[in-house]
Amino acid sequence: MSTGEGNAEAPLLPEEIRALATVYNTPSRAEVLLRSAGYPADALPYAPGTLWEYWEQVSLGLATGVMADGRRSILAKARERYPHHPVFRGAASVPESRTPSGAPRSGTGRLKVMVLGAEPARRGAVRAAAELREIQSAAADALDVLSCPAATPADLEQIRRQRPDILHLACHGSQGALLLEDHEGEPLSLPAADLVETLRLSAEHYRHRLRALLLRSCGGEEIARLFTGVADVVIAHRGTLDSDCSTQFAAAFYRELASRTVPLTPEHLRATAHIAAQDVVNRAGFCRSLRTDLIVLPRTA
Image 1 (cartoon, rainbow, N blue to C red):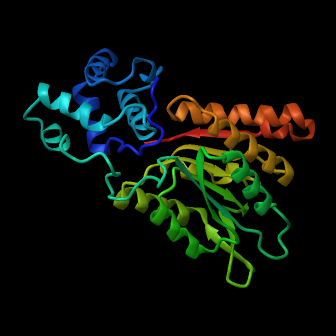
Image 2: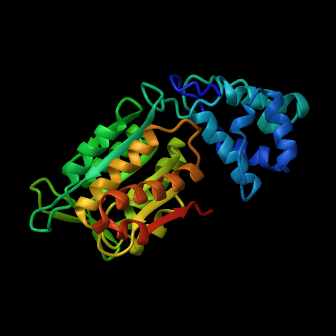
Image 3: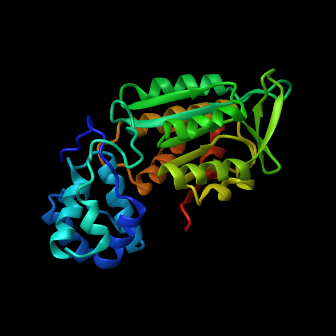
């Protein structure tokens, strides 16, 4: 299968996914359209729960370069069959070289991972810097890693500027909030609901689709579900999270992600989290809670 990893491809827009799921409303009808447009047979969605999920998987495949000029080819075929459909009629002429927001996904076409780390004074170490180093090492040349160490609330603006595919939060969390830093390194509490709203606005106004959010803090079960409306997959940890184990999990997760040979789908991301947790347990038995207390949540409507 040719993945076209070197070129950034535009994914389907939400209104296009909606139109395709409505018109091509069975897997067999959708497959006929995709095959006629040149979509690779071995990249067709596997066991989606709904037609919306089916077309979301197709969109993710396009974004990872599963076929060149894919979005336009699919919409052009749909327009041939339904020339007066308001979505298909105009969408097929949109250029593919940039994302719908007008900004490239990545200068290299690789997935973007943004790491926001914070270790405010007198709150104990989360080894955010070590976690960042492990992520950068694991990413090699397959992922683009953007770092925001000693993150403050002002750094959240970089989410909509950079529009990462994966947001990795390495910080303390408690009572429905994340602990970032102020400009003097003191703890500054950011309600998780405010970060959720920041991500929602980025999605709404910049068409930014967050594929995964990794919450590497203790007590992740308190706030993980808040993020399921703004990320395809939310990965967190229940209860106390050992900082060394978290660092090893990050290395294993991104190493597995960097070695992928298939289009990145929510299913692949969820599997990668479970594989990474088991890989760490195999090497360090004291990190067994990574597997038993792992939280992996899908997107909710």
